[in-house]
Length: 455
Image 1 (cartoon, rainbow, N blue to C red):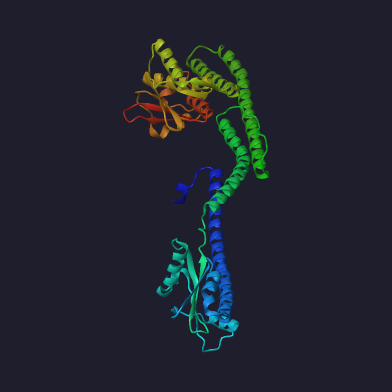
Image 2 (image 1 turned 45 degrees about the vertical axis):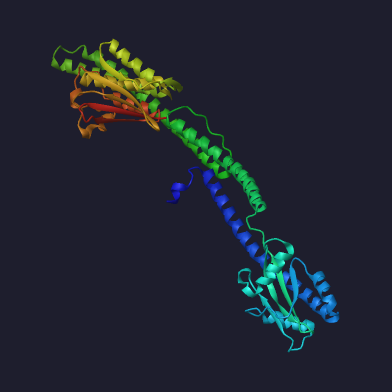
């Protein structure tokens, strides 16, 4: 399921993983920072409120009542609200630790009442709401803070000093500044990572292109061995493999050409000796056998020469090539038709491709008397079909006929120039284009050769 959503390229996958890890780490870090900062600010605000309360209580105890209002007005702040009331605001849950500390600092006897509560922002009871409303009236705006510490202290004159300490609300974790910082960090990190990955994958892309060209039989130069050590080792191994395969193919081709050439000398000698034999059936069969052997050697030499000739690849209009071949056969009186599909530009070796198609068309004309050619462009390949309306061949022989010097019984006659190399040569030429040649019996009758060429 996850693979469906992952991008295909290595660069995109690494970038996605890196950015996802960065965002996750950033979220966790901000949440931890926000929690720690909230707790720290709460302690600081509470400690500041306690010190201010101690000072105010001492001033109220040492000054006449007519100055109390001015003292309270001067002692109030945006984070601390103070007011004198005849009755206390009693908290629902008292904080004994803060009460003991305040009583100790003020030196109050046990009979003097102190009520203190430390509430969370969502735990403020209804009894403390008048303090918040009083603050709102003072500043003329809706509440932007949370009451964290509130209660009441009994003074010497019997009045109660009600207080409320307000803590600033934390700014949202994902503020515009935090988001901008994250985006900037992600952009810098993505740019550096993309540059590094491109440096690593660029040689691999050249390797892919080189392998594709080499698979099509094109002459390629060794790849520059650059990049990280692992990539350089891969490119070096590919260069060595390419050189070894080139040597192997060249040695095999030279050996095949040499053997075929050397066999022509004794074969010519046998033909001369046969001329001195008396006329008869034995002489005729011997000469027919030697003619077949000469055809086989000629075809083998032609195959070896084709393998040695390095025809350069170029772009052609494949539709025009097939149409011209069909017209040439028709001018010679053959029943060949082509179903055109419009212009189709393709990079190939035209002479090799033409000879492969000629072998297939000649076979169709030879064994069925007609041939139909068609070209279809698919998503990732080109499909060329050469179909006849003959009897076809047995399913078991569809692959065997591509073996060198394999002929079916219908083709075994001394008058035919067939030596069983036509389909083998055609498949080799298609393989040199990186394609595939297969045969199948058409559902409506006849044999169909299918050439699949990569785009």
